[in-house]
Amino acid sequence: MLSVISLDFGGTLACEVKEEYYAFHEILRELGYAVEVEEVREALSIAWNLWLQEKAETGKVWSEEALKGVIRRILRQVGAPASDELVLRAAELYPHKLEFKAYPDAEPTLKKLKQKEKYKLIVISNASSQRNVEIYLENLGLKHYFDLIIVSGTIGYEKPDPKIFHAAAEMLDVKPEEMLHVGDDYEADYLGAISAGLKGVLIDRKDVHKGKQCTRIKELTELIGLLNELK
Image (cartoon, rainbow, N blue to C red; front, top):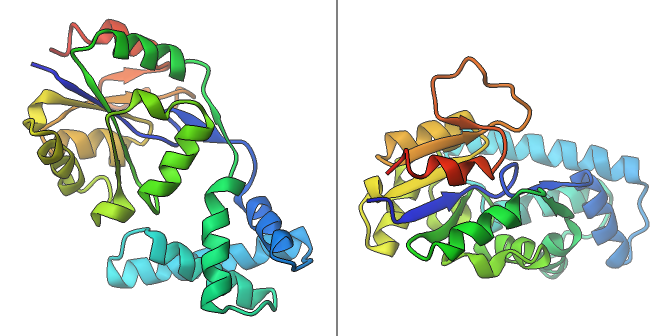
């Protein structure tokens, strides 16, 4: 019997409304460093590529420490002091400077699912920290719908690793087959969920996965009608 519905955050519940380098530009300005937007964009690109290289070599997951590493590289790249204090202040500002917009179908769907009472709603997201995702959800007025928020940076495993899904099941004291996960990334969300023993649904808002053999929806509201089939 299905008892838990898990949702990804970015691309599923909400989308970013401005490029990330604008957020870092605002952070630097608030910290007292006047740097051109283009310089910040280039610094972020370099810092991010170095992180991806480190990730490939070490297998590390995106986390709060990884975020601080990217911030430190950005500070150095733009000529600002990369002190621990400044890095920490920038990391604290980071989730408040990113801007997300909830998809129009997100809250109506969450509200209907919550009204059914038999489902626990959770978020499973590949993100740096639980705190950051909680801030994003709080800013969007969606946090109160969720019973649990699972984040790769906190757990230590990223989707599609089955371990992150199994960690959620263990925390909720349910079996993986009692869970359904919805997300927009075919490999990380759909295949990850299926390989972990969950039911999976791919939300394909731009209709780019027509050829994929999977349970696919274009809007979250379609999930309500699917639930009877997925029991």
